[in-house]
Length: 170
Image 1 (cartoon, one colour):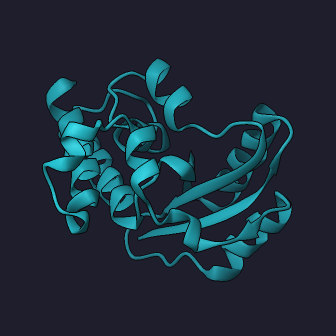
Image 2: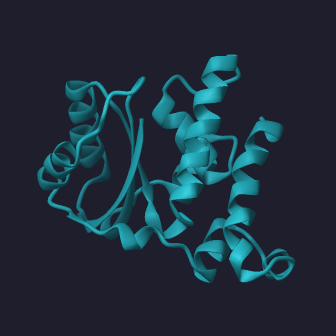
């Protein structure tokens, strides 16, 4: 099962913040990835990244050792962590964060579990921050010429194309 939510708040220390998330994920037997929501173009962007990452592990073509890190690669449209983390990883300060929760099989990820993590991190849930816009495309690295090739309704497809390209550039 995949669940994607948005949240906003403040991150003072990224390493400490991520340690809390990792501990929580291990305790609850789930995979959790956090991404800069300002670089996310809708939930489909992240669902596609998860599907590609899961497929990479099944085919043994994964580049990283964990599903969460493989999701990060695909979500960023990059093949190397040294490029993916600065691009779409969380940063310090006031932030918008996209959370990707993945649990094996049909195990459900409850809203109360998500609320527990957000409370632990002092974040406020706000799924609207996951809606991409023209600025999101530019931050992702899509140029004006590429944007002009599609209608506004297809902007999300430009991101999905970059996610899918990770398989080719791996």
